[in-house]
Image (cartoon, rainbow, N blue to C red; front, side, top):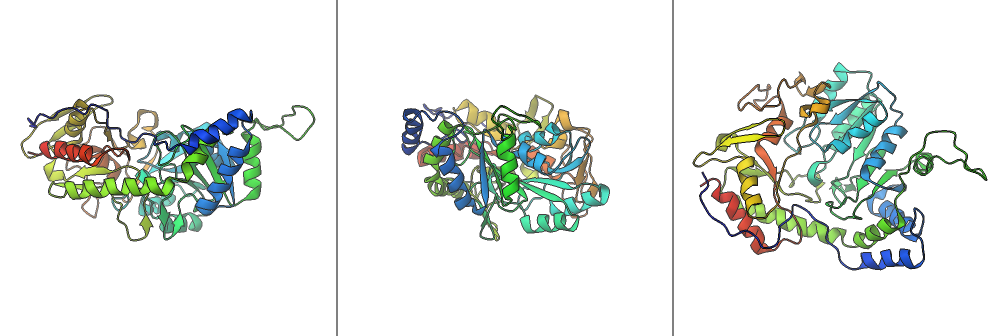
Length: 420
């Protein structure tokens, strides 16, 4: 049991908070002084242009949130009530909810250890089980690109539309190409905790001019081109504000700087924790360059003390030389530092518990939310339910790019103390 006493940080060390520089305020002030305070204006136009240039897409539509962009992508993909849609399992529920907005039925594809993203082998298995599926939504977790070539090949084989959720991976690349440019329809996010932020906001990205035109129309209440307010289809109030676009516009020039800072944080954790029975989340991959948004760690199975999670409660039993995410997160919180559990897989969420879930072994429907260490294994010797295993053993470390070296060193010592 950890008995080391630490002095709490005077100022909270955040998981990932906005980092402002100055130009953001200038563009917001410009919107204010020119009275372009609504959903049109120079900031929006410029942010869309910069995004196309940065990501390498033909068209970008600035929207109120990444979730709104995903909703528009699902609508573009033609999802209808009752349609099954394959979705990443270990992700935030904003990846999945837009499918349900359109009446779709998510079927979750298990995670793989190499990238912590959708398993292409499990995706192929899923098409064997549900050959009627025509849409796949894949997310890049914590800034690490998934195995896009393999996933795209599976989608192409089965004539499925690919929606790429790059909300967490703006600035990351796969084989030299930016995430957010691989799918038929793609999205990015400027939420307050992302690599750059507008406090809110997101983008729908596509190479199809007609798709971009549809989203511009739908996101402004689907108003027809008439001298009065004419409406012939359902619309939404999803357009980005010119004020928020001003913040994003000012942030864009610091994207590479933020990535470099996040990478340095990741490398310091990796070096500082190298003597512990833990591994960092996969970032140093041959085919990709992540944006290092969040630094995470996973504890070796043999070094895990007993930990049981219910729906909203968790218990663990302290054990000398071992630890668990709960113990580490509680110590960080006690000392005014913010960590987080890994995303709880969607198939474990009460709202989606009865939906299909596919592992690389086939149908891997989890029968309980309580993780049982050493449970069912696949043919490769790994746990059958990879997402559940990573959730059980992993956690997100404070990754704020304003965190000082001294603060990070103290956080590393806290983590070490939990294994002493």
